Length: 132
Image (cartoon, rainbow, N blue to C red; front, side):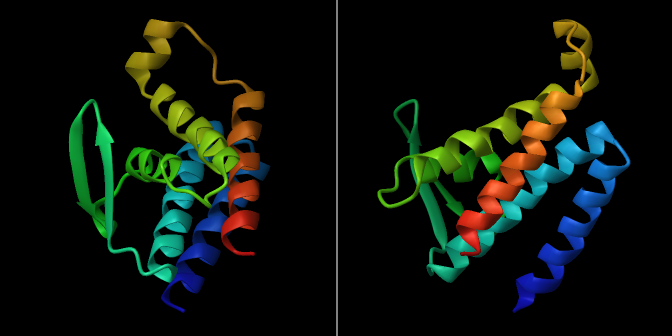
């Protein structure tokens, strides 16, 4: 499929960065990889538009314009989609936002190995769920 090469390439790059301890790269790539998996899942299920409500506002987005946050908001409302997948996907979203220099300085938190491992393990769990 058209996703095979993309998923393999991105997974290889993610694993490489994780193994050489490139913390920021691993976190960024984990979110991007999860977005690719969610796009693949939706396409496989013939979902072309992602719709959800946010603060009483109805959001409709074309599948290929969705961010990780869009997918997580959408899947949170879907029956049959494992809720734990949404929760662990949120880890990558939260930590991916954390790595912006302004957030890192303002919050005075360190980018620790445990955060990187959570994001990497989130990818593994979501991959198992989506590709099963």
